[in-house]
Image 1 (tube, rainbow, N blue to C red):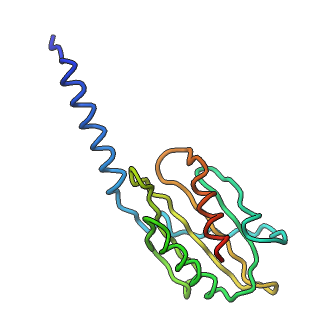
Image 2 (image 1 turned 30 degrees about the vertical axis):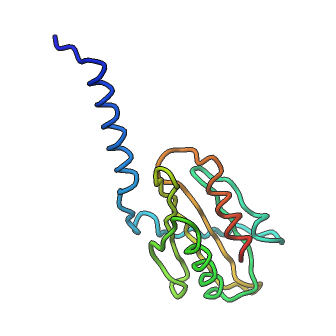
Length: 154
């Protein structure tokens, strides 16, 4: 029977933790998995976008009506997203009507994916936006806070 010393056990634990951290930070973000349709057909109540943020499994979502054109809404969101810390464009464009960004946490680089989709309606531009995590099951309100920040700047 082989006995492993506590020092070896600690070293193996540290190496496993470092490998996990590297995987989280370096795991590729495939647009096929994250740049997906997020629009619903739910009715949109009146009021500011920030009033319509709802918690969903693994994140948050919002839907609202805006007076700008669909392209103007997504262009503005793109500018807001790219000025957010550790956030970069993943896929899409205003011309496509959908954009997805990846935003990483400060310490470990956990990725969250934010997808915004717009469509023209008789009442204005409908914006559906979802922010969700990739790893884990609880986001501690980070995705809802991100949506509130971004939507307050629209």
